[in-house]
Amino acid sequence: MSRNTWFFFTLIISPIIHLSQVASQCGGFAIKRDDKLVLYRITLNTYWTRIRFPKHYPDQRVPQFGKLIGRTHDRTYSLYRLGTRLNAGITQYIETGETRGLASEGNSPSVLDSFTGSAITRGEGTSTTRAFLDSNHTVVSAVARIIPSPDWFVGVDSFQLCIDGDWIDSVTVELDPLDAGTNEGLTFTSLMQRTWPQSLAYRITSRYPGHPAASFNYPNLPRLPPIATLTFTKVRKLLDPYPDPRFHLTFFSAIVIFPVEGVHIGQGLPRGRC
Image (cartoon, rainbow, N blue to C red; front, side, top):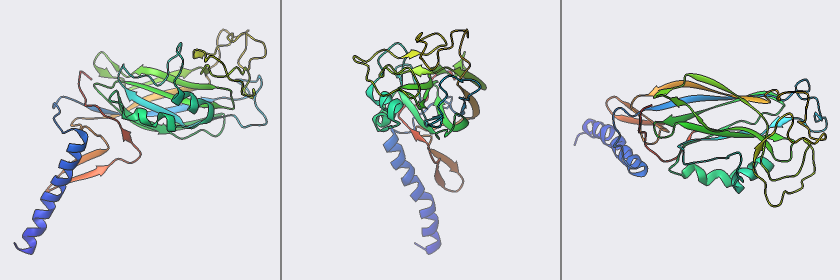
């Protein structure tokens, strides 16, 4: 075999072998041509200022928000749910910022994409990330812990981005503070006092908890001003998706695989209307 022929053979065959290995790891590429992936930009804006929330505004510790932790998933998965006792992985993150307890959840067949946004190191700021969804995983959940606080956070639970068979172009969700139900504290800087047994997670309002010492107790307000918002903006559809969207395939005289950095994708193949 001539040197030129061997070079051409390597150019064609080696990437195909690589592609075959990726296919075997991800379960193959048997996907219908009408299946689609969609990429969304996810933006957390926070508004914890002295003007909006003057009561007990922390002076000794800088008000801030932990990193944004999220999943795109189907209806069988829950990152958190109000009215239930939250699992150890999510409560550990809310209380301490530790995320190792959540790591294994990204491998669930119910989860397509596990994403992270940077922490916001002051009360007012922005964190932006991106995430993939598909026809089987059309909802998104995300949380960011409130610092300082006993066990408070902001987030969305199973927010639907596919309506009547169409992906939403852009939507903004106003966020209230939420209580994980693991700590008795009423103020931002309360000492840790474990709730036993663990309580149900709930939404904090201007009148609940009703104790006058509570940091978010503003009984003269019908509701709290939003402490944060999450905005979901459709970036683009991928018309020819693959089981693992970390790999983007470009066909010319050979097949080349480019990983999209910073994205962890769980299992699951796109199906359905969106």
